[in-house]
Length: 264
Image (cartoon, rainbow, N blue to C red; front, side, top):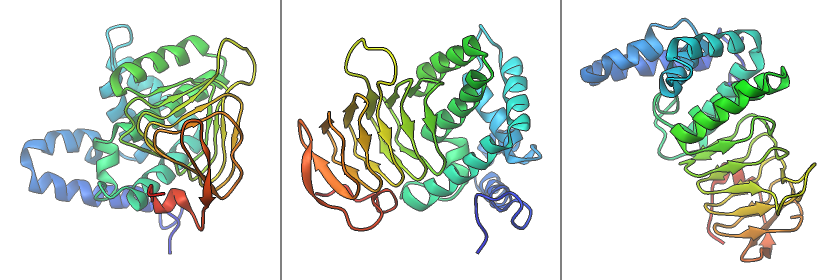
């Protein structure tokens, strides 16, 4: 089986599948054909498609769409890992989100994926010491998508932001690979302290809707945080926590991020 995150496996299987889905959608819904052609079918790679679609969403009077497109295209071309991570994100969405009907929906419509991809560009700008531009992007991403991620935060690949509205991720937060996060989740601080002050979310974690994880705490790998919980202390690996404040409710068997089972 081809690895969907590898652009060299059979050419680029993610891009190939996306093109097939886009062609079918354009035939079935002619009124959207122009959008689909502009955003996908007229592009020569996933990276070019992402630059076009997200700059169209975020173009603003202070930085016009053409200028933003050129910026995004340059960052994506110069940093192959962003496109590779986007491919893994797309595959994760298709595998975990029952509302996804393939690869087309995330690229065209899902603001969680679009916000995460735009954040990845801002994060690269932050690493290049283009901090004003990175912060500008954070502001526009928050305004347009309702997702507020500080560009210094570190987020892995194969990440799903399901619905995504009102997700907040602070400056020193870390989200590792293969994590699923629902809407209205906060990875925040506890006050005005400086330094390393935000949560560290390890591989395979599932965070339910409305959960607030505050402070420099660690959520162990394959843990599950119940919806509406407030987490103020470290969470061991392979457990479910829930409540205000969150307490251990039991053991987690398997991979909660992939299963997306929120029932406790």
